Image (spheres, rainbow, N blue to C red):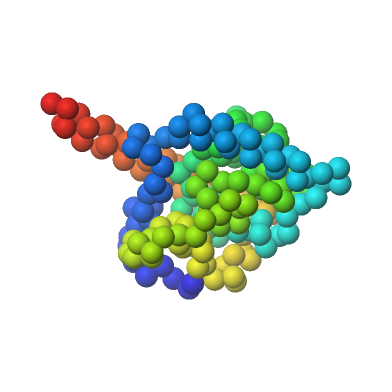
Length: 204
């Protein structure tokens, strides 16, 4: 997929992508979180004694699903669940319940093992590149397209641009990704506030 047809030069891409469907309050149920913790145990097993890793192409697809590609000149914003670690320069998934520690950081330094390296790994949004990936629904292909649909159809040459370890990223790319993440978080907060106001009006 070359360009996202819903995106104009002067448009803010974060507002163009449909929000992923989670549940009515915008969060994950306890049952869902428990299931994701179980799936991470499966991931640990898939690593084995020889520290097996997924291949680079699949890892780049996971990076796209989690981090987007705005930091390398693309149009896809980061996932709404991407969170800053307390350790500077590290990120973890806030949607799967695994928490913030070295074993759950999505990208690592050099040859270190990161969460996105596991041969078997589940995503709370069933995004491309992950073991539990589910194809997008037909309505996700209509403008504005969903993040999942965009990731499914991204051009391979665009995918190849994505770094898969922290040292591969320039300082400019890191800053760009952080700005995009902050914008996404702000949009998410605004959406939550809007939902609360709508619920409040319905109750009154």
